[in-house]
Length: 104
Image (cartoon, rainbow, N blue to C red):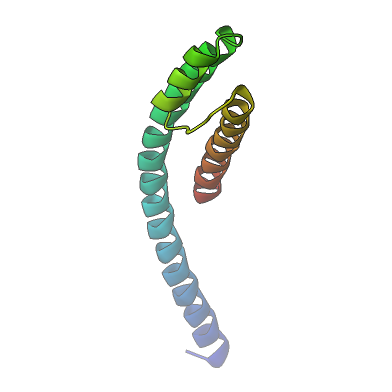
């Protein structure tokens, strides 16, 4: 073989190695993303259900605080509840974006 053929074969071998590593990482990333997605979907559904209940009882502070406590939100007022819900919604959105970045 001449030098050009050697260089081409070397480049192909290196490309194959990189391709195989990427394929492995992509598969592992997809599996990890799938696991994270399942966990996050449960949190999302609970959050959606409970936040809707809070909106439905918007004038009843005791019920709001009770539902917030079920979500793990420590609040002393309606404003605290709404602020915590806003932060939780952003956290869920951010978590979905992290999973999206793992996949793409």
